[in-house]
Image (cartoon, rainbow over all chains, first blue to last red):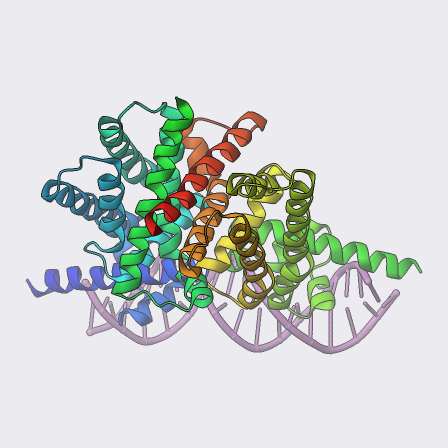
Length: 216
Length: 216
DNA sequence: GTCTATAGGATGATAGAC
DNA sequence: GTCTATCATCCTATAGAC
């Protein structure tokens, strides 16, 4: 029985370590030696558990990124259940809050945003997974919810662009933290994160309502 | 004299090729062999002209990215001179237009956004250059201009967050084109780019004005 | 499942001829 | 300035002992 236990633990440690390093440096900048030595296991273990390095990268998405996206969605829904949204503002705030003040640690959120941004900027083998299982469900869910609350319907095109804009801000404020900290001098403590949620909410809210006014 | 001419041409070809490949794949995913063979020159020429691969990367920023950022700034100013901004909307539109419909080709704009995003997400040796010579001048210029036009002043903090949000959208719509094309089904033709500028303008404009209302 | 040892190949960099 | 040839080092992946 102990070999099974060890198996799971080693495999998990590799996945955790690999995710951190892939997010930080990118696939090609990380060697299997770096991963295994950081995970405290043998050089050959990646090939044993995952076949090859490419497949390890895919498994990081299947076993870590997708479940986390799922957790984010659940957190988003919980926030909405606690305080049923009556205005677009409630919805945007719930979304920003789920990502920035939700169940993720600062490192986890940044890692998630980095991996997502990498895939969005330069699609790799994991692109299909990201689009089909993270982006599309999010956009459909969120879009439908938003439409149902808006005082008057928004065209599919404008809705998509607005959702992309909100997503862009949330991801950007998460993954570009080095520049933002550098230029504003603010570190990502609770106060600043709360300010970020406020900002995104107000900025996006008026953005969306502006779209409606213009479309009248 | 011909050796000097050849020098410049080869060096330039290497810089052009390297920029495209670094932007597309990232520093570590590109080998000097790949660059030199794509540039049609000898393997040793990178070390001869730039010393080593690291320094070639820096030179790509010094000789290509920074000048392009400068061109963008000039284009932005020209647009403002032709139509002096009277409202925040004019300013946001001029900014979005300079980047999305300005002097850059689609490939050039995407390349620029990719390189900037890479540096913002994972700072490298070129980070200082990007922050000091691209980000800071832009934020200061643009922030001052925006303040001077706003009906009532915005706090430094809110101003910065708004500028980062606009920047996030412009960069995102440029560098994440694979996902956006994939999901919306729209290719980046003139019509769609014009829609993007409109969208960013309206979205950001109401975002900024929303900030003022809230601050009253 | 984990280890060592090693194969087989790609990489960045340099020396030296032209 | 450009080339060829080459070195030392790194890489991924595998074979085989335990």
